[in-house]
Image (cartoon, rainbow, N blue to C red; front, side, top):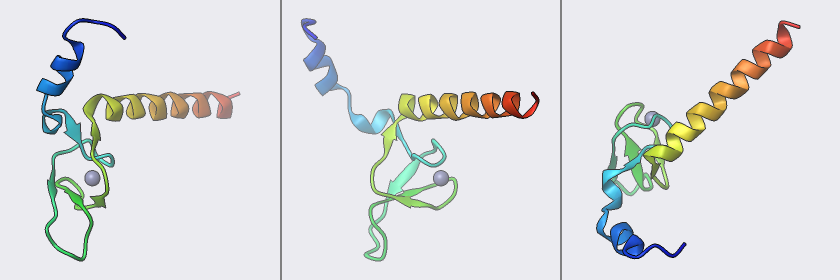
Length: 77
Ligand SMILES: [Zn+2]
């Protein structure tokens, strides 16, 4: 991609603003406890290694929803 200012725009956006927990798409906190690595979901208290982008979570939701609809269609035939 060769858009002037694109990289600057990317660098200027703090990742914290748009990342969510991969399990619930919820807010999370960094865990400081040694027993857990590395982030904890506020919604379900699950721990996970890497937060994901909010849009990624929505993509996943869309996909699993689409899968569910396809399964249902198969079952109804
Ligand atoms: Zn969760």
